[in-house]
Image (cartoon, rainbow, N blue to C red; front, side, top):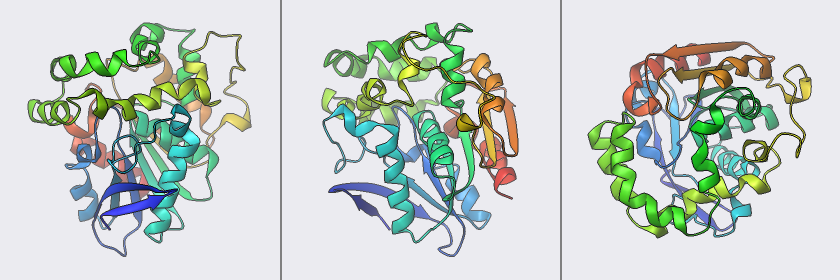
Length: 286
């Protein structure tokens, strides 16, 4: 399978590994694409797993809706479910990095009947992240979330600085060049920016950009907010974007078996620590 469709959109996907193997859906983050899994997928395939790595909405050329309402977690999760359906997978494992991690948590929380396990790389549970905004310095780390709410300006400025930003944050040079080249024009970044601009329209994500008291804030002890799917969270202690407070808090939002894996690493875990990431994924799946 090279592509799949949903609601008139066409998504590119890399389908590898034994067709009879359990399905693992790999969801990339911002601003990357499915190639971030190029070092991870073969290791999972060797373990007998079938991997599906799509270019998500906003990234696939045939799936770039213009409305910010088209980038809510509900829509993103529906894309992953459509991919699983196209692959004939009633149930699947989901692994996500960065925004893909947020989507993975959403799938586990809202579609538990379909999800066997969830592994999130870098991204804490969204409610733990929301909590951290008022209990740590996370707001300073996430200043760009507010900047990206602006129309037009971010996608015109970002292409000029992406390569340096990637390199300064620890992404290997070859990957930095590859991603920077892909997102070298404003048009190539408008879709990816839609994920951030959807936050105010997304009940599950707007806590990250609105002050406390303006929306309902979660309580970790509430079963309603807990993931009931076996979960692993992999976090790098040198992550420039996501801090320790949310990482430590995530356990409170999982009621199933949970594992926290801390690495001596930065943010770009699939690109920089593929063996360790794969080990954590396989430990969760097996």
